[in-house]
Image (cartoon, rainbow, N blue to C red; front, side, top):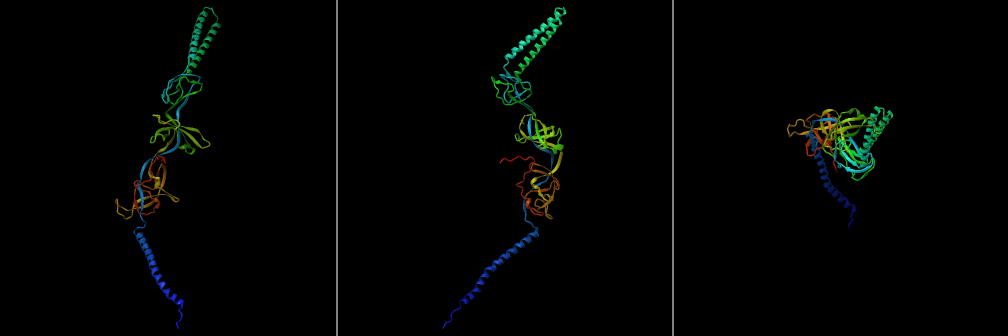
Length: 391
């Protein structure tokens, strides 16, 4: 009789086989991982033994000194030396217009003549009355010499002559007001006045501006008063004339400070021979303060600002490396003392010598001793007078 088979015996027999298969699969994987880690560690140790860090690509420039003129900048508004709206004192009908809009006129030039027939006739009438009064006075004085008239008659004649003369002068003044002249030399604006137009007293005829030279008005904070004085040199620039500089000097400093802003108004007189600058323009005024200084100049992007100080990185030959164009360069961090700034540039007072090779880009990934690969294809902005970029 056949004994029944034990089901557990078959499972027990297959268990070793599965363990063997698992070991065959897992052991090579473990060996591969361990080998990779050992290889990576060995490579890192080898690199550290050769000098440590992987090279970094940076841009560089040679530090050089430039002249710096310290200055105080402000936004200015241009104003004419003299500017008026030419108008008429009395009403009248325009008879002649003797100018064209935008033209240059001399002082005293006739701009407009109003119809003046009545005034001219009145002046002629009073002139005749003055002549008669003069003749009468002369005749009565002769009569007085022979006691033919009294002194009272002479007194009345003299008073009458003075009255007639005053009336003539008044009529002449009224006639003169019918002729409107330029009060000073300058450039006329645009006018719409035409012949035959009736003007009331005070009506504007045309604007007149004297703009050579021209004023530049600007404000500076009260703490800067000690840096400016009368006759301080001023440079004015305007977006209307890119690249041009207009020279002038400070001619007045206000006697009071604006209580709301704590700023003080400064007036500069600027040469404007070709009348390129016009009243109402805004401009940038820079007052030169102090004498010229000589500073090492770097792009501001080359400076790293840290809580523990301000630094730059220099590109220097590695210790023991051969000199020449193929010398290996490493980064060296140095502390610097900064001076004034202008545009994209900053002055270095201490820490960098002229001729040193300064790293201007890529320094964020550097530490002392990092090997360098120099690529100067792209350089940071380094313009002392940058212009806004239009989008």
